[in-house]
Length: 119
Image (cartoon, rainbow, N blue to C red):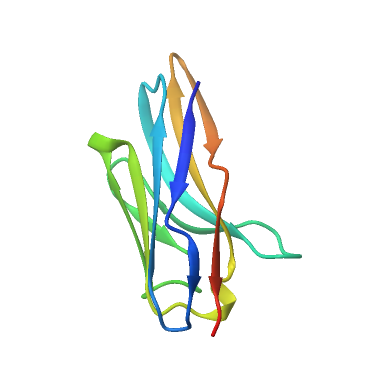
């Protein structure tokens, strides 16, 4: 069984920073792309940032220059450093990992962590 456990969400004032973490555990053979998505009330889930196993990164235009994604392969962990946060960044943030268990590759999701940007 694979689990993705997120941490680091919370309430922050506009202009502040937060760091999200997501650790994958279980019978994992290999982890390929890891990423962060978010879903605001009444909106569709959207990609925030992703990082491949070779550390190539991809960001949504709305977060470029403010957010940084990184990963620690030894810990099966992905991070999202969020700076200069804006009220429109408020959402539930979900960790995603495309990984292999045995001979099968699938997408796995975390339970989500709330990020609220408000004064």
